[in-house]
Length: 290
Ligand SMILES: [Zn+2]
Image 1 (cartoon, rainbow, N blue to C red):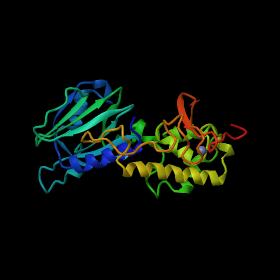
Image 2 (tube, rainbow, N blue to C red; image 1 turned 180 degrees about the vertical axis):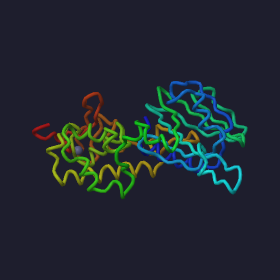
Image 3 (cartoon, protein in one colour; image 1 turned 90 degrees about the vertical axis):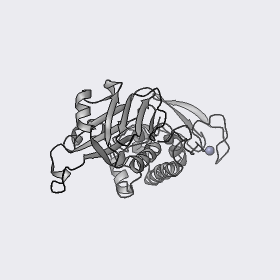
Image 4 (tube, rainbow, N blue to C red; image 1 turned 30 degrees about the vertical axis):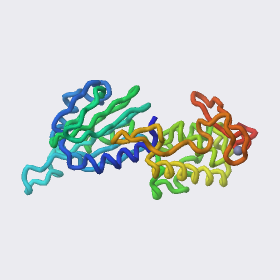
């Protein structure tokens, strides 16, 4: 399933490739992935061009605008001239760009055809969301409005901000980091190496985490996510052109039975709530109260 590094790369590629492209047609094969009736979705997006594409957690967030009919009426001041397109690939999926004349895939849930003959298709492997909003209703979009800190933003994700979100929280460290309302974008792939680098057991209770451990955890979140983002994301995930990322789980993630890269102890796969965790039992000892 795509996590922050894959979504950041996808959003960057969409920003470069789709900017200025105008949506001429929309084919919606799975209306239940929308947040409104298909007719309303079409009204919001048809005829508008991509202006910029960014991200928030595991969501791609795009801004679109209708071209202004005359230079004396700047489009920004016209009612209804702007829209937002929000995409979540859920448990996994392809979001692919197709140059004019390219053969389109048979399977997709949503397809955009642009005025220049190019296309963009979205296929969810299991289930995902293709949502639309206006600048005015974006704040009411609960699934993105409640997302927490962006760990790739150095200003927003300062150590103080991270410590502030940790403050007073109970529960285990893994479930804290997986809760998108705290830090947005970490899932069950990157969490493994983050906790290993921080030398914390996934079930470690938050109130017992020391100041030094908080610093290590903060550094590990930044290091692992930045490292994978720089490598185009996980090697099992595909980008806007169908190419795989280059990041592998090089430390403990999905490596049960193999030696720990630090101490050589055999890596174990354990059950943590509804998810699996991969730990080095020597480097990531459970504390007494875990
Ligand atoms: Zn170890």
